[in-house]
Image (tube, rainbow, N blue to C red; front, side, top):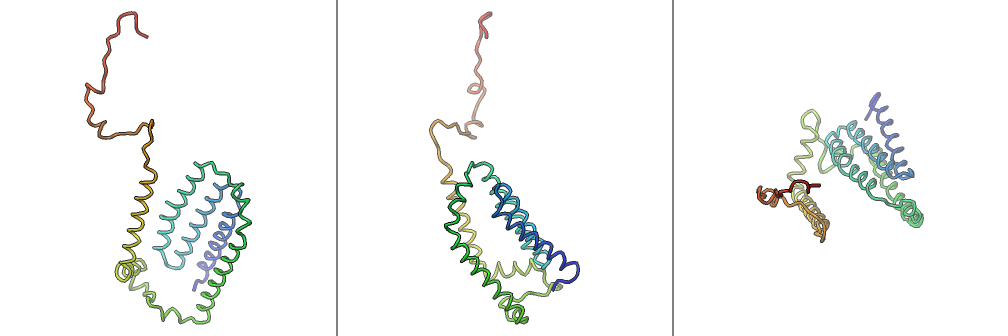
Length: 206
């Protein structure tokens, strides 16, 4: 349990994260929404640090803030998307969104109530949390990930590899009339093919 200063920082980070999440969906400017999303990720990483999950905190910052959120920001800034038109049809899907929110809220209530009314539930877990003094958090995750779940880890890597190759194939289209860089042709150039010398007669130059 968090006590004292740690508890104060927990409530501070939690409040900022919830406020940022609300601003993500209520901000009119999509760039501001992405910036609030980055702020929410940073506060979530701080909450992970307070609970001792420093590996998850670093992964959240490196992957989501350093890659996903920045990618969202570039896409929003580069594409001229009419978000006002997109938001007009959002009310049609509001009941479905509300239903999903209620289901998630019920699941969170069940999880928290189980941890409160059954404090020893963590002792019966298949992979109990090791003692921080004897085993580091990151090392414990690595032990489980690369032993019991190594097959699923490799499958996830293959899926990401196939997705990356598919994205490259879909975007790599050779259109006619578009100049492309050819590294081999540039390296193979000689002075005879790269330089053209013309003799200009006196008084006929530009």
